[in-house]
Image 1 (cartoon, rainbow, N blue to C red):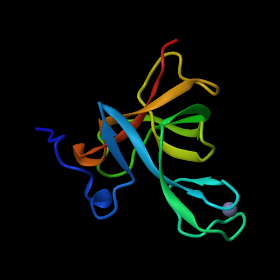
Image 2: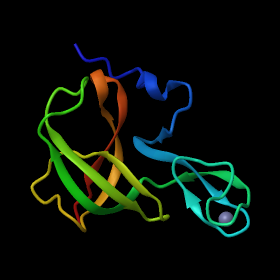
Image 3: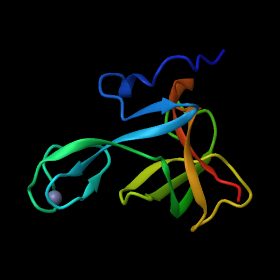
Image 4: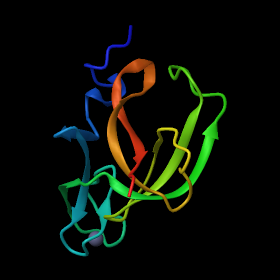
Length: 130
Ligand SMILES: [Zn+2]
């Protein structure tokens, strides 16, 4: 039985996302000096040394690359696409994807709540149908 009501324990002490209306909002940050956006959130800017403030990110982006993990890590029950996604706010995020025939470099995707490691709630990227 899969329990999707609990969060991935590795994320529990410092969740990297929250959900609003069934959509995932990633907890990033933005520099008050140069505007650089980071995910996960940072305190000090890697670009200019300025201070970052928390900023919720859309979870939407474009696929930079796709690979399929034929031998998934412990806790994942099947092979799945693994994506590098360039968020519209800028940061590149590595995360599991949801299998889709049209999934490729350049696909528009959105982070959605999904069971991940050991069935705990996390997020995966899903192709946005035009
Ligand atoms: Zn900065």
